[in-house]
Length: 202
Image (cartoon, rainbow, N blue to C red; front, side):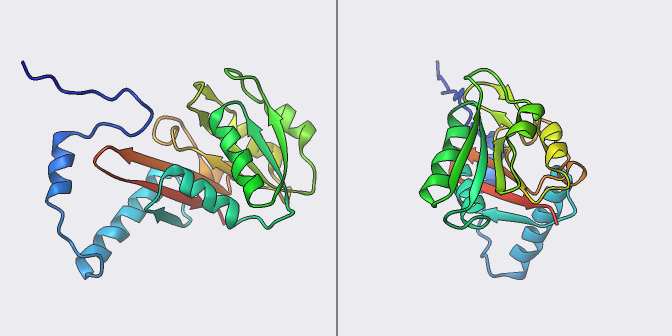
């Protein structure tokens, strides 16, 4: 009997045989009109998928690569940021922000618990340039109240950056309606490089 291996991890993930065959047959050059047409369609479809009318950017990087881009492009050394953390990937925001010279203030919850919008309201300061958080913390299974936290930040100068790498497509997000400034998504497959996206609100 032939046994097929199964991955039960948050990423990389198994691909359907039809998707593997499609990837095996891809011979399109990236500087052709055919590729530009396909790429434009993918970006348009991603806007619909995410629920934004604003720009979508694709990276040939892991989700962490997109997280790093959200730190390096939105902050400068010495900027004060607030990080919501309740697990390993919240801690990744802390590490990335520190590596790039930010002054990091953290709002922590124990593993398996979440941070409330009220806690954010009490901790948020006008000098916080960015608030970094998870939509869903896959290391513990916790889902943060992105909509409620976005309401807290509305009218402030603090940018809201949400790592939705494990939540996008399984959790309801309304990027434009809630006022999320940057949302990060990602898809990992065992047969190819990860793709990460940044979805930016105007």
